[in-house]
Length: 73
Image (tube, rainbow, N blue to C red):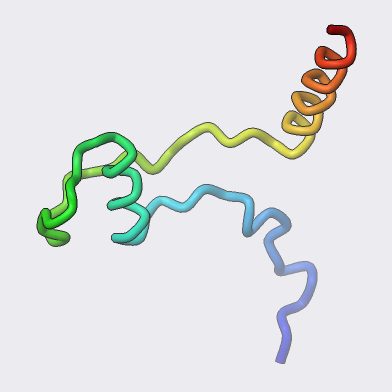
């Protein structure tokens, strides 16, 4: 049985996740040079999950600006 379309959340997949997987936390710690190979994977330090994500429209605008700047030179 499917859910009625009036009950669906419109932007359900666009909200940020509040929890990272262990592997995602390790990747962020490696990027910040706070975790080395061989360190224990249990008891990892806290990692900030909220970060600024560019919207698709903003990303396209930035790409267009870069290409126009390259054409002028």
